Length: 143
Image (cartoon, rainbow, N blue to C red; front, side, top):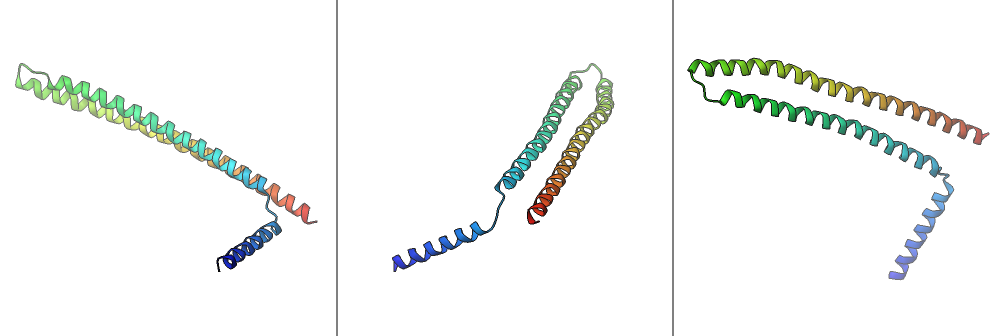
């Protein structure tokens, strides 16, 4: 019984090899498509990592600046009114810092978005050119 199953499996394997051999496959085109996709992914990852790095740097600096300013707020004061003034000064300074940092985050996001769109457009043009060349090659081979 085991010998019959092995023979059947060999028959199926041989049939699949024959069938796949009858279908022309351009492995160079597949390899090229894989390489192009890998290159695009590498570039897109680079854009994302650069944006994440810049965002992390900005967040770290913002946190350090805020903690330093909080140190001034937490210092002992001679008069109760001085505490209120320190908190008011801190809040006023934070309003400015928040606006500046949000604008900086927006610039990071805008740059990442424009680089991503540029990469996608470039990849689309390359794909279109490759597809056109493949159609022309197939048409010429069919004649």
